[in-house]
Length: 221
Image 1 (cartoon, one colour):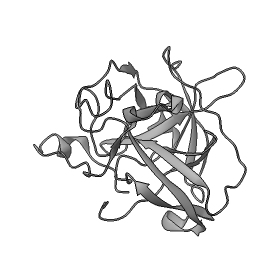
Image 2 (cartoon, rainbow, N blue to C red):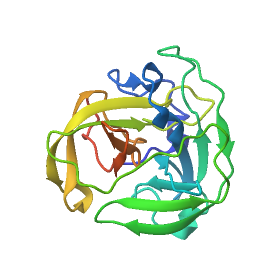
Image 3 (cartoon, rainbow, N blue to C red):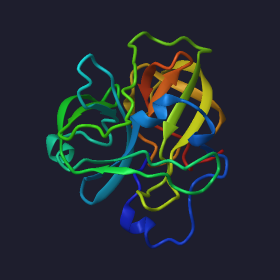
């Protein structure tokens, strides 16, 4: 994905989110509250999505894409917007959201798997969910879902509220962005767009198994 620039989006009066995107509030996944929109500076303002990971101490470990945050200088500018969701299914009204100030430490990253693991310098707010995860490789045919913030907005703009995409793994050899053995997903509902980069992919047991790297260009349903 080419990451959206906020100053460009703010000059546009028309939402660019695809019509087929599905409001995540229509589903009861607790993982919704593990996802945050992140805003950061990389030669200008950029946005991505990311996920709060679980460990025994519930430290604020946060997973996003390497093509979003790939240096400590950028990580230091990362600020998170939690609960950027609607009040109810298709309400079009934002629920109360929480902003975490800038600051994160880049702990690990890898371009060949397009991930960056951050430790936020501010604790996650009350009500945030620490997502379970697994490193077990998912087979072709596995059912998966993604939770992401499409397009280039942050609260209080409504457009980029949390969406849910549903599909299945159709290949484990995707190589966009020079990935090594990436998952290719066939979405049966929803899609992926710029701004969605770095968002989590979960299996049917609710374990995070991947990070969104690429999508159709141009974005399409």
